[in-house]
Length: 629
Image 1: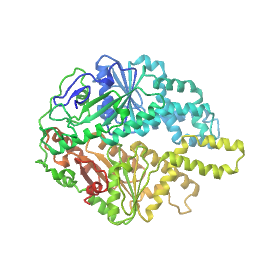
Image 2: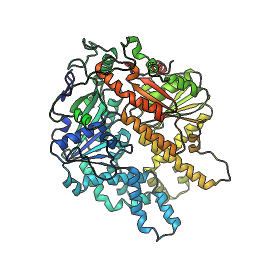
Image 3: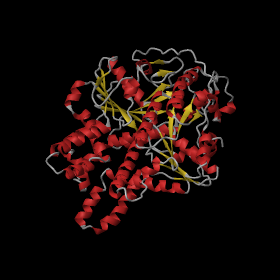
Image 4: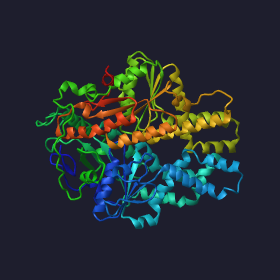
């Protein structure tokens, strides 16, 4: 199969890209975390600007890293990228947006109302609803304000990991429906008071999102089963709200010795010189061949795996050069532990020891010594938290412990990763939709039983609020963590932005209980359990790449401010630990070494490195192999 519309993998030459041809005013890049949508959005913005257009690059991700990619400080104000004439960037910071939104509502009544009433209003404006509404206001302005349209030829959105993207892009329809139906319970009046003045703006935003003449959606994926499945789900969900004119970009395809990818029927190309590389190419091709028909029907571009990390202008320009030039590979770097990789090693995690770090099995042995407890895996989406959580859970279960493995990730694939059953292991998912239904039924049968028809109607309306998800999911999370008294609970948390929202909910609950009970009574809140290393061990999962390491370090600082100290870091899918021999993979491996060193020396109390494997660790035997089982 010849790869794509835009690249020849044997030479690095590129021609035009379908997803940028005749680009409309608005471009949205979306996909599962870690697929490279930030890099592609940045490279696209550069290419459009260097083609003579005026371009605004916008990040709406709570864990935004656009500034890191460009190497400049970008905030909630339009910032010129000096090295690229015509290009400016903006990051929508949810916290800053909430503060500005809250002050816009509270400011006019401050000093007019009693302090207690002002404090009550501020409390109403401290939940997840306000965060969504405030970010939504910023988002819709860019789509509907004539001043933005006049200032820029293109506005490129680097959206959040898929779960956040779905929520963000569905907000116009959801909020329009919510407002049309009227206000909910008084708990929602505060956030809604800032919305009612702008009903027409939301309708305009919905129209802009569904208009292919103005808006183009680009799904970004990797040649992997999980990310392609996520892209198919995203396609279906966004098509349902009118965004059905979509493009697909398969990013990071490992180049072959010639312009053809290997065929599952014939195996790797004859010129393949690295069994690890050949096996990865074959795995990628099988994933592409098995992708959902809805993706096959989309205009598709393929981008090669680059030798360098996509940080800095030279690297970004090389990803999508506008002149069709060829990118010459640099000489392969030598690794501290090079040499031929035997085929038998391809499924082993023993390569981590070559870098002087303990493997995952050492961390599991230390966790097992406690006999029970909560194990939380955190990190940016796409770093492999689901796989690492499943591997830890399987290893603990095989050591004879009772284990409950669960997830709060809306994009979770635990069922696919853990294909099989194991004694002592229970697997579940905190599904927001299920928890909302359960919570709604509980409230209606308890609180609702004491209300008249008018009161019951108000209660039902309040339960349609987005705040309900925050409450329902948090309650489910609390129930699962209580099991950690008698067994191991392994929680595969959501991508970074979701994780922070989850912990913020726990923190708000902690502060409210402390306020109500004072200092005279003994109590234990979920936040106190998270802060106690004897009860909770937090494992940060990252990749040996610049942006994932920086984001994991940022998450670590956020955890520390909440009184939670991460117990260990896991560097997943390390090429350096796999001892590659191909020139490109050796270059990628050499680029990993400074990041691995930073993790070991600057960030982590203890570190495990898991090598990139030729065969994806799906199923209990493969997962057990990750931890030495």
